[in-house]
Length: 153
Image (cartoon, rainbow, N blue to C red; front, side, top):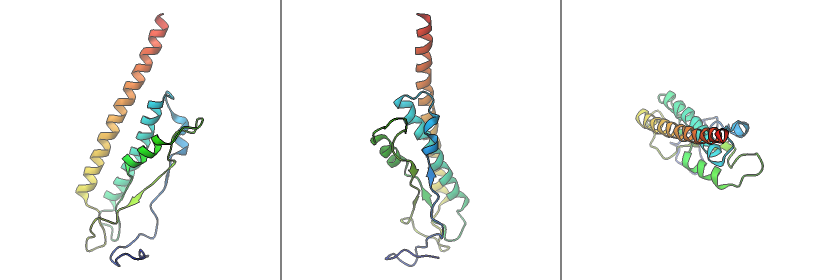
């Protein structure tokens, strides 16, 4: 098992790096194409990946030397929304950063996951996902209302 140079020998690193999640294939899937809906759909993509990473943490809670991982949702969304749009390429970040948590204390088996923390993070992610879905539904209902009003004229 590899060790981090300059770190304590008590901090193991998995032989495999964290998985990389590529969002580039989701760019053509936008429903309305409006700026708001594109941002909301990207948020759903990021939250979906974060839920998968957190579920992996929960599944590996008893795996020796496993270090918890997370996708920094707010930082990723800030990066996505701050970069200018060029053509139909969407916005910002394409490969999601999956961060390994070296700061949390290790248990005797070298694992640093806590089922309680993972369930709390999964609950937060689920709430954000549901809220984002509600905002997207509102955006779509406004678009639908504008289309039906246009037909009545």
